[in-house]
Length: 181
Image 1 (tube, one colour):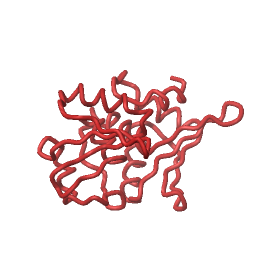
Image 2: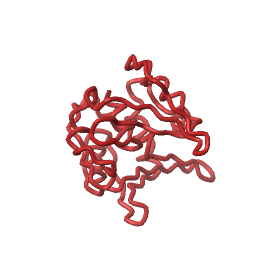
Image 3: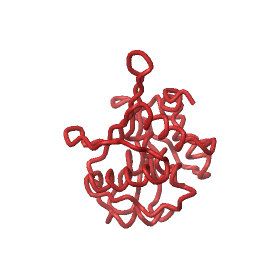
Image 4: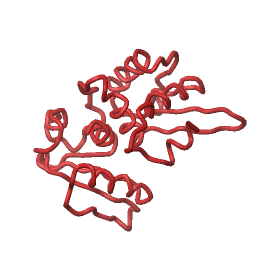
């Protein structure tokens, strides 16, 4: 659930306080299928051919209290705060959020950089504190132009090791592969 909550914080929304959904690019539909299987979801997965997107939706009743606490708003991205997540599940939540609004880039040579984006600076400030405390990240800086945290090679490796340390089953393969773990 922590992974799903993280992914929802990045790529989800609530409709009229009753339904929540996660929409991803069609090429990532397999993760929605895994989530559906994990949660024993028997509903339909929706395809938006014109948008090259896939969507899964649920009733808010089955979702973590912090989602409902957002007040049923469809525009959550600039208002979210980092939720209270038990330490054991932090890597899963952060990996879910990263799969939605994170990126890892291999640049010329062996340079490796990553970024995590959010419209909420409060969310990113709290995330950076947690990553420094739990993942051993030393740097990381906020870029106000892109509304993101940016990490260099060493911190990107630490971030990857932290997010994937428990050999998780839920993750976007294309992002994990770039960490080269």
